[in-house]
Image (tube, chains in turn cyan, red):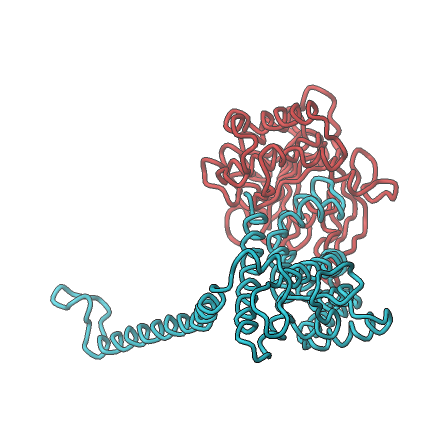
Length: 296
Length: 269
């Protein structure tokens, strides 16, 4: 076949068989593109439905007083869940104070100091296995280690359970964040006479910080919504917490408790609490991204 | 350029007495794991001149360059035999801190790698990590280094803007400025122009001519025109061996080795 196109031939249709094949390929391309778009839209369906449902059922009871008042007794109307909001904030914050330093420093060790050592490989493997551990096991663990030892359900125990839950996520995403830092930056730093420590603190960590914070927020978002670990550790309380050493209310346990009772007001309050929980997580996420987004 | 002996200084020595063996390599072998990358390299690099390393990819020229400031030691499983001396002192002397060595031997990389910080903070990085935080000192270093790298006029009004907003050529000159802020004795340049367009390349080459008044420069290059334009002496490496090392003019006009001639005439590599 003569590959040279003469003036008498159409440039686009050298022969009809070629043309048919091209049309088939083009059609296949459109079908697959369409499929991808449809399936992508499909993933939005659950998220949008959840938010719609939460707004529809949760908004009616939402007012300032739900943040300031205590949960209503069975069959009573009015009241709020201020103690549960407070309890969730405290336990997640305390869990983060435990898990974030351990997770981030471990990530620094296994990536920056000792990538291939047995300890690093063991830590990485254990962290990967821990991400798959059901959250209820974290609760049972903290029950055995903290509740049994201290003899009481407490915010401490809840925080430990949440910390165990958050640790692997923080560790693994922090390692990924450090992997994402261009090696050229490290080379430049060493080339200028920096020590390993200086290179990590001044170059690697600042560059990895946005990604590390994303990991931390992912962990917070997951921990804030967990019920099972808290039932075993912090239990619940109808009252404002007086100390970290006593049973403490949390939003997730409140939702669980109220959604299983036969009183319509409590059920509606569970919806409102769900809305508040989702709103907290979302706001915290957006705030973290705004604060820690790359400035350069 | 009348002399051709490999150990002599160039025909036009700088005014002050320059050491012909400022950076001295003797019987140097280097291994990445089991693979030997350099074989028995011996050479003296003279002070305040530009020495170019040429040769095909994988010939060991960058490996040798990265041994001068011991950057290769950041890789696992490397080892060396033989000696490298700076001003007569072994760079492997246990008394020498490797971080001090890297301050004395600055490096400019193939791909410009300014930190994602401001222009100012890039320049003062080397000072800050050595504990100098006095504003007057830092300001002075920024202006001196940027003038030294012929970048001052272009960036003096935006010192506190991100270095990543500069053009490719400006970024590479910023990396040079950052390296000279430490007042090193030697500047190592690993293919500093390979990612630059011809105009930016010309500026960097012009800068190299300016810098050799104050610094001893070793430049790795794949561009033979660049070697002829910028360097006083040229070393040709092939398969980890130093094949020929002489005045640049001699290497390119009358090489004594067949392999050198084949390479510079483009018959291989």
